[in-house]
Image (tube, rainbow, N blue to C red; front, side, top):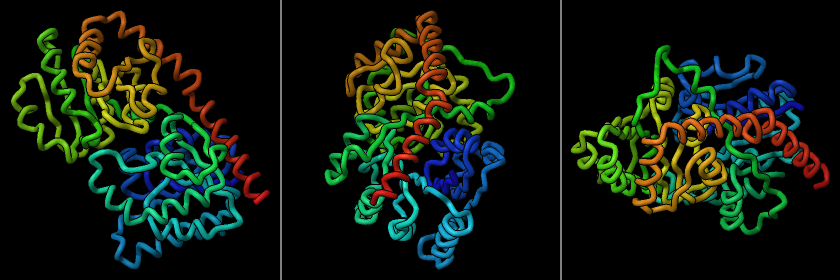
Length: 373
């Protein structure tokens, strides 16, 4: 099969799929500089050399070159590459969506990461409402859709009730194991280190974590909380974080090479989300074999088995969160057992070979749906 893979966003989530699909199929990858840099400055080394790549430069929407770049990329994928199928990571780009909606001959598979904006996603909320008509038209046009969890699938059906449930398949997030290549030699785990990583917006539950952290430090006086990232919700907590000697704040965009070091040094990763779909942060934690404490929201509980490959606690429950973090920090044997559970998970239902086979089945279903339509 000849696959035009559009990862204008979410390239880190696509790397494993792209590399494993490339073992059996021909791929033409179209991405952007912004998405590529989330993989790393040497991102091209991560992608299988057999994959044809078009990386489009950062150009503002009002610049005519923006429209030209998008049109050329679509033309190359459909006409020059002669793709049999388009797989698109959903992007709120009205011109791109307008062009692809008009493509009738080629089947389209659309991966939807977030059916609607998260709580506190101020910037994306504006784009979503401005371009909602294009987004929903693309979802209707797709011959098949993918979400990364059953609960995310439920959210998509609630947001778009006219979609037929049988047109939506669930393929879990794969481990973002490419980050491991960036770990500096000699980097070791720092005992007692808890990592909170990513965009710091309201749905991430940072306030709940800080409330729980006061109790964790009373039981584990040598524990350290690393908060890495930036976002709209950070300002109201910054003073409290900076005033705690057992907290370290890294307030900026974290390049991939540094992401690798942060996860390699962490003992535990914490996701105290109050609302969610799925999580790339958890996918990185799994790739590093790090026990994660997650809340029972969205599809997060689908990515770990409570007590076996992670710990699941109720959302907005600081006591439960503090208890889980403390137990993981003080019980080395339990952490090791969870690391073993993660390894078994990565060799079975989260193996890239298995996930790529699931994607192939979806592609075949999409191609059949296009033929019958």
